[in-house]
Length: 99
Image (cartoon, rainbow, N blue to C red; front, side, top):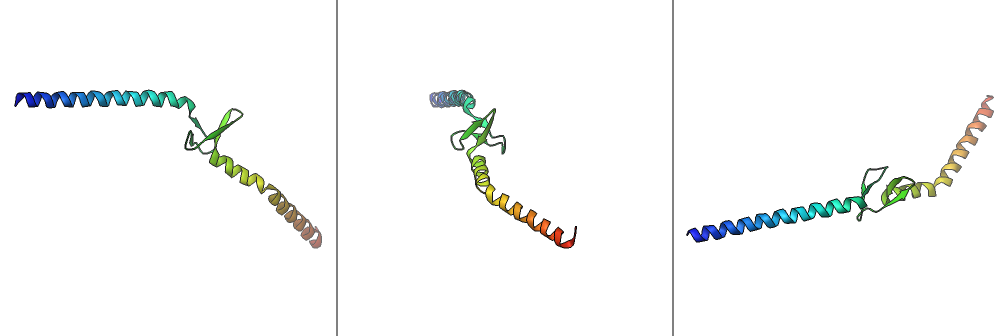
């Protein structure tokens, strides 16, 4: 019976040691990879493999924020037209009212 307990203890110790070694390997890997990770300055998402990022000047921006900015810039002409029409309408209304 004592032999079985000794074998069980030995197996448990081996599993614990293997677990500690694997944990240290993961810590070393994560520490190594954090140099490649950056934070998006707009949404503070970590830019890495799942969410790639692009360095613009000194700051990083994630692909999602970059897409949103692109969509906004693509519709910039429409915004400017709307603003010009509103300005024209305001000036015409002010002219009709005698201001």
